[in-house]
Length: 226
Image (tube, rainbow, N blue to C red; front, side, top):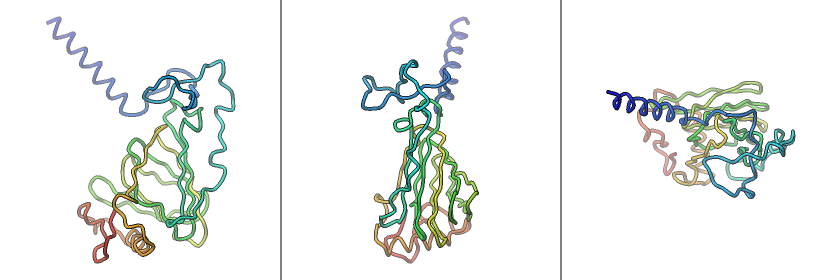
């Protein structure tokens, strides 16, 4: 009986530990600014902390998002994610931040973040945003400056600028390393014609049109899918 009780206790500890580790682990101290990757001498799941005696206020400030990204590309957009490697003060806090810049009629192509929920705040412009859940239901809205939208963790989502001016979005992610899986190169024909067809498809989708993942292809249009 004692052996069974001990075994049960061990399983309980293992199970609860797994539950905790499903997300970024809670911090065990006030802060833990990261050691720059180029100065690391050990490799762990995350980033090691600086010596607390060397921690300064600068560790908790960043200018990484102060400048607009280049939109001189076929999608007329840019997306930058800043994690603990670039912003040491984020280390162990379970957060990262980002900036998205989209020219008029620009597109952030369908993608997802395997380790994070993303909350976006529109600071400028008018956008069409949406995500697809595990039941293949589309949730899509028009956003204006000052509005907020959330993309749940690991769900496919996109952002499209349907306004007449450039748009800017600030993102917050629920992981210091959210990851990014994009369908741009793996399953998408990167030509101007195909991108325009994809934009049309994204703005015309409705939940009733989607019955399975294959339905996300542009029916009747060649080589357009994501």
